[in-house]
Image (cartoon, rainbow, N blue to C red; front, side, top):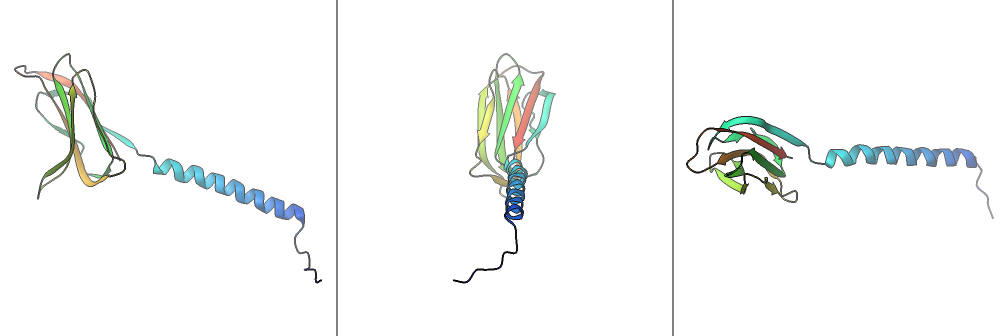
Length: 136
């Protein structure tokens, strides 16, 4: 039986394996957070007239949106859409003013799309504080 020459000591092999484990752990901690969706707030208690839509601007990727309004009654709406040509609303949610309108579609993200939000209270004018964010 032929024995291969021993080029590496057991201690050096253990050291290399330990370093590889540390590298793999560090890489996992760098890659995993980047896969999580970032939340961008595009309206933060913005005083907005009824029916006026506030836009997120063009977003490269959208996986959901939230909208809420500081108001006792009425509704708040959030829409996600692709602009003209062929304007198309892909996701929309409406909630009572006491709640949060929320869309969520991480498994089917929109690309190069917009989110916009607004509030409405029939026969009442004025302004209300609008809060809107987009995930992507």
